[in-house]
Length: 262
Image 1: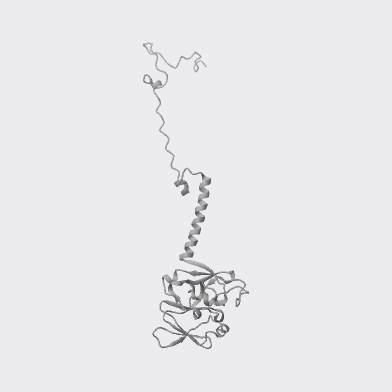
Image 2: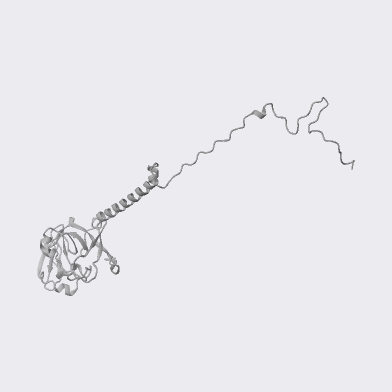
């Protein structure tokens, strides 16, 4: 065992050289004063990225409490929706209710009003833009403001819904069977108007206007109801100027079983 193990006490890691000087312990020599040099400071932490919020009110008013911003957001949303609806009603599409039987059976009114065929009045939409892009066509169902004399003849005025029969310059005649004939401006020939939307019973019930003739002035339009015997229309109070036409009825949106385009 003595050949492999030395039981003598071990010396310290340093050793003396021939001159009696002791070597440095393990490791490389360090420069004087190394232990007092300050450590290199860590680099500063990066600035946090700015928080981009989707809430425009928070961007505009960052100091505003969240509860106040929520209330303002609801108010602005409701006001915006109301303004959009009003703009649509004023310039694009407007809803109307059919109050009388003058346009039966194309447009229903509610019983028990005279001549009405339905339990609920039709609600319709009128396109207010269409006549900005084209002229009114014969046969259109039109919403219009009535002349002042309509109130005296019909007992009420305001806004009516009728079918466009006569264009500017037309001459219109109703014979003793309720059929309508039209002579175009400058023409000497009459043509009978095809009106599949007028029931035979409604045509024959209109005895008041049989054998009468009307002329449509330039820039005006002549309207009649489909239910001829129950309609107070241009035959009674005259033609309607172009600027009083509101729009064409193009859609029934109520009641559900009547929904569809006209």
